[in-house]
Image (cartoon, rainbow, N blue to C red; front, side):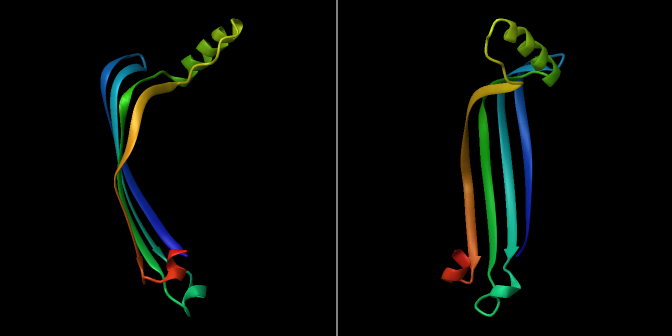
Length: 112
């Protein structure tokens, strides 16, 4: 099987930030496209081809801190037996806006 997948991701942030620390709103848009051509082994039965297009968004509110600072904070929290913090976290949601798959020919062996 031969195939290629291409995607592009753009991130938008609005909030407060200084010295690598940021907090605020975010939105991430991801667009993807994929093409495949089936294996030559299946060619006697059918030469399967597929295309897929997708668009998804991820949005919410969150924070990011540099990885080194997160490690230092976690060492300090470990002294008090407190749980570690992540270098980035937030509350958000991800939605698939568009996802279309087309398989040709329309045979069961190609959709397996």
